[in-house]
Length: 134
Image (tube, rainbow, N blue to C red; front, top):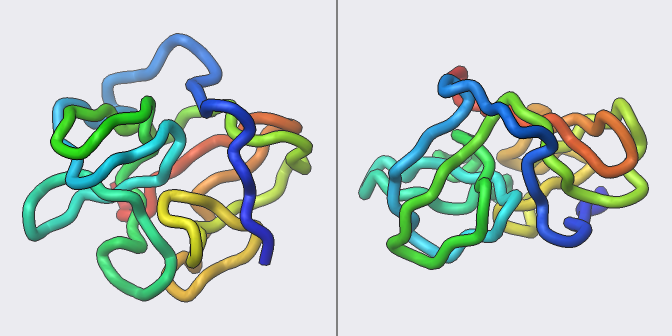
């Protein structure tokens, strides 16, 4: 399994995001980087980086961070959109939640990240999805 590194600061690959493809106004429970896969923690309702290290709530992806924020700041999560993410990506490749890098992606499934959460559309962009059925 190979981790997929971010190239620069991930950003939205377009200008229009339908209201049904974003979650806004929630607070973070930790510092989060742009492009991190994130979930809503049931215990406190805050946003944290998802991880595929175990089969648990943290292995869900409720959305992807639209910008970098510190703990206890408001964040907007996106899903069903394309973001500029990496370099030299192979178009058509599925990516999974990383089991070793919180908020990251890998080219193979992890213990908790067993379903694809993104797919490359060209050498630099990925389409990102939710995994909680939403």
